[in-house]
Image (tube, rainbow, N blue to C red; front, side):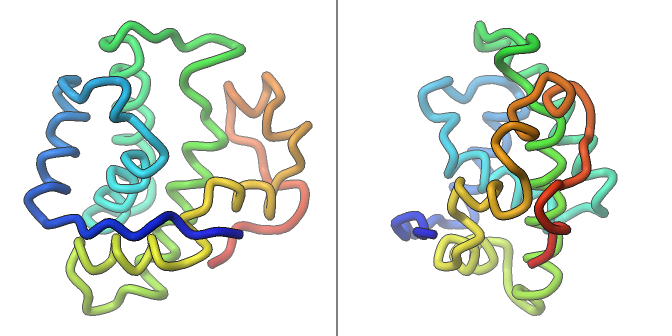
Amino acid sequence: MNTIATIAVSPSEIEELVADFQDHSLPSERWTHQAHLIVGTYYAYHFPLEQAIYYLRSGIITYNVATGGKNTHERGYHETITQLWAKLLKAFVQKKCTGLTLAESYTTLLNSPYAAQEIMFRFYSKDLLFSTQARALWVEPDLKPITC
Protein backbone atom coordinates (compact mmCIF):
# COMPACT_ATOMS: atom_id res chain seq x y z
CA MET A 1 0.00 0.00 0.00
CA ASN A 2 1.24 3.44 -0.82
CA THR A 3 1.47 6.30 1.60
CA ILE A 4 0.28 9.77 0.70
CA ALA A 5 2.94 12.20 -0.46
CA THR A 6 4.11 13.97 2.68
CA ILE A 7 3.13 17.60 2.85
CA ALA A 8 4.08 19.44 6.00
CA VAL A 9 0.95 20.67 7.73
CA SER A 10 1.26 23.18 10.53
CA PRO A 11 -0.92 23.14 13.63
CA SER A 12 -2.66 26.30 12.44
CA GLU A 13 -3.40 24.72 9.04
CA ILE A 14 -4.94 21.70 10.78
CA GLU A 15 -7.05 23.93 13.04
CA GLU A 16 -8.16 26.03 10.05
CA LEU A 17 -9.15 23.00 7.96
CA VAL A 18 -11.09 21.47 10.87
CA ALA A 19 -12.85 24.78 11.56
CA ASP A 20 -13.73 25.15 7.86
CA PHE A 21 -15.11 21.60 7.86
CA GLN A 22 -17.12 22.25 11.02
CA ASP A 23 -18.66 25.49 9.78
CA HIS A 24 -19.13 24.07 6.25
CA SER A 25 -17.00 26.76 4.60
CA LEU A 26 -14.46 24.21 3.29
CA PRO A 27 -14.89 24.12 -0.51
CA SER A 28 -16.02 20.65 -1.60
CA GLU A 29 -13.01 20.29 -3.92
CA ARG A 30 -10.78 20.53 -0.83
CA TRP A 31 -12.69 17.70 0.93
CA THR A 32 -10.13 15.16 -0.26
CA HIS A 33 -8.89 11.92 1.28
CA GLN A 34 -6.08 13.93 2.90
CA ALA A 35 -8.60 16.40 4.36
CA HIS A 36 -10.64 13.47 5.71
CA LEU A 37 -7.45 12.16 7.35
CA ILE A 38 -6.67 15.55 8.91
CA VAL A 39 -10.17 15.88 10.36
CA GLY A 40 -10.24 12.24 11.47
CA THR A 41 -6.81 12.51 13.11
CA TYR A 42 -7.90 15.71 14.87
CA TYR A 43 -10.93 13.97 16.41
CA ALA A 44 -8.98 10.78 17.20
CA TYR A 45 -6.30 12.86 18.92
CA HIS A 46 -8.66 15.01 20.99
CA PHE A 47 -11.63 12.78 21.87
CA PRO A 48 -12.58 9.28 23.04
CA LEU A 49 -13.56 6.97 20.18
CA GLU A 50 -17.35 7.18 20.55
CA GLN A 51 -17.25 10.97 20.70
CA ALA A 52 -14.92 11.13 17.68
CA ILE A 53 -17.34 8.91 15.73
CA TYR A 54 -20.25 11.14 16.72
CA TYR A 55 -18.45 14.32 15.61
CA LEU A 56 -17.34 12.72 12.35
CA ARG A 57 -20.78 11.29 11.57
CA SER A 58 -22.71 14.47 12.26
CA GLY A 59 -20.03 16.63 10.67
CA ILE A 60 -19.85 14.66 7.41
CA ILE A 61 -23.63 14.38 7.07
CA THR A 62 -24.20 18.11 7.59
CA TYR A 63 -21.13 19.10 5.55
CA ASN A 64 -22.37 17.04 2.58
CA VAL A 65 -25.77 18.73 2.63
CA ALA A 66 -24.34 22.22 3.21
CA THR A 67 -22.03 21.90 0.20
CA GLY A 68 -24.75 20.68 -2.15
CA GLY A 69 -24.22 16.95 -1.73
CA LYS A 70 -26.71 14.30 -0.79
CA ASN A 71 -26.64 11.41 1.64
CA THR A 72 -28.39 8.52 -0.12
CA HIS A 73 -28.11 4.76 -0.47
CA GLU A 74 -25.63 5.32 -3.31
CA ARG A 75 -23.57 8.35 -2.31
CA GLY A 76 -22.64 10.70 0.47
CA TYR A 77 -22.23 9.61 4.08
CA HIS A 78 -21.05 6.02 4.70
CA GLU A 79 -21.40 4.75 8.28
CA THR A 80 -19.05 1.77 8.07
CA ILE A 81 -16.26 3.68 6.32
CA THR A 82 -16.56 6.51 8.86
CA GLN A 83 -16.38 4.13 11.82
CA LEU A 84 -13.58 2.11 10.22
CA TRP A 85 -11.42 5.23 9.79
CA ALA A 86 -12.30 6.56 13.25
CA LYS A 87 -11.31 3.24 14.85
CA LEU A 88 -8.17 2.91 12.76
CA LEU A 89 -7.07 6.50 13.43
CA LYS A 90 -7.78 6.21 17.15
CA ALA A 91 -5.74 2.99 17.36
CA PHE A 92 -2.94 4.59 15.31
CA VAL A 93 -2.79 7.70 17.51
CA GLN A 94 -2.81 5.61 20.70
CA LYS A 95 -0.19 3.08 19.53
CA LYS A 96 2.13 5.09 17.30
CA CYS A 97 1.88 8.70 18.45
CA THR A 98 2.40 8.72 22.20
CA GLY A 99 4.04 12.00 23.19
CA LEU A 100 3.62 13.56 19.74
CA THR A 101 1.75 16.75 18.93
CA LEU A 102 -1.28 16.63 16.66
CA ALA A 103 0.78 17.87 13.68
CA GLU A 104 3.51 15.30 14.40
CA SER A 105 0.86 12.58 14.71
CA TYR A 106 -0.63 13.54 11.35
CA THR A 107 2.82 13.52 9.69
CA THR A 108 3.53 10.10 11.24
CA LEU A 109 0.23 8.86 9.82
CA LEU A 110 1.03 10.19 6.34
CA ASN A 111 4.36 8.37 6.38
CA SER A 112 2.70 5.07 7.24
CA PRO A 113 0.69 2.56 5.22
CA TYR A 114 -2.33 3.51 7.34
CA ALA A 115 -2.88 6.68 5.31
CA ALA A 116 -3.61 4.78 2.10
CA GLN A 117 -7.27 4.77 1.12
CA GLU A 118 -6.93 1.13 0.03
CA ILE A 119 -6.29 0.05 3.62
CA MET A 120 -10.05 -0.37 3.93
CA PHE A 121 -9.76 -3.51 1.84
CA ARG A 122 -7.42 -5.09 4.35
CA PHE A 123 -10.46 -5.40 6.61
CA TYR A 124 -13.43 -5.50 4.21
CA SER A 125 -14.30 -7.12 0.92
CA LYS A 126 -15.50 -4.61 -1.67
CA ASP A 127 -18.89 -6.34 -1.88
CA LEU A 128 -19.55 -5.90 1.83
CA LEU A 129 -18.04 -2.42 2.17
CA PHE A 130 -19.99 -1.01 -0.76
CA SER A 131 -23.28 -2.62 0.23
CA THR A 132 -26.31 -0.50 1.10
CA GLN A 133 -26.30 -2.03 4.59
CA ALA A 134 -22.67 -0.96 5.23
CA ARG A 135 -23.42 2.54 4.00
CA ALA A 136 -26.37 2.93 6.38
CA LEU A 137 -25.18 0.97 9.44
CA TRP A 138 -21.97 -0.20 11.07
CA VAL A 139 -21.00 -3.62 9.70
CA GLU A 140 -18.21 -5.69 11.25
CA PRO A 141 -15.23 -6.43 8.98
CA ASP A 142 -15.46 -9.67 7.00
CA LEU A 143 -11.71 -10.14 6.35
CA LYS A 144 -9.97 -9.34 9.62
CA PRO A 145 -10.48 -7.24 12.76
CA ILE A 146 -9.50 -3.58 12.66
CA THR A 147 -6.03 -3.30 14.13
CA CYS A 148 -3.11 -1.00 13.78
